[in-house]
Length: 205
Image 1 (tube, one colour):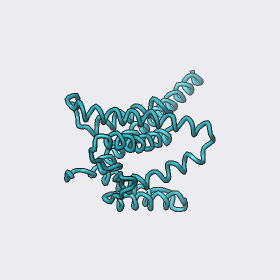
Image 2 (tube, helix red, strand yellow; image 1 turned 90 degrees about the vertical axis):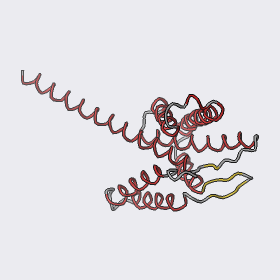
Image 3 (cartoon, helix red, strand yellow; image 1 turned 120 degrees about the horizontal axis):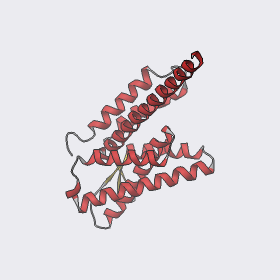
Image 4 (tube, helix red, strand yellow; image 1 turned 90 degrees about the horizontal axis):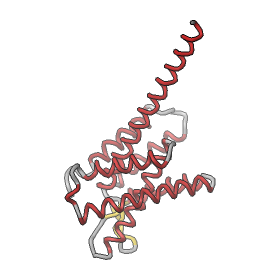
């Protein structure tokens, strides 16, 4: 295992944990739940379990709980749409790994960054809501891990589902989605402000 494996995940997780612990509304229940979840995710990230002859990261299993809980609270139309979007993400995730495995010559940039950018772009194409973008990326990537591990098992290749490398990709994708969404919100704010100034100028004239 590389010494840098998981480094991005730990930095991003601690960053969001600090925001949740010190900057979110202290009276809100979501703040406590998010802080505890991120802390637990960091603690269990190095550990794995064997289930049905597959080695699974405990962190990967832990991520599945809030994802399916979130889906269960949606009405069936939104649920089906998000599942279809996550299915598309899953196929893209598996195809990327298969191409990287059998034809790695086209990987001209770091693999994690290329995959994170692809997942981010797909999330923006598939969904307009910020929270749903992260949801379909995480759920699609986890499902892609299971499918990719199933394909590799046919060739007896060992693979850890939800490894630290996987968590690095998710962390990069999350940060890219947050930054891009922030730029969208900022552009929307300036656009509204500019339009308001234009209307005021027209009234004065």
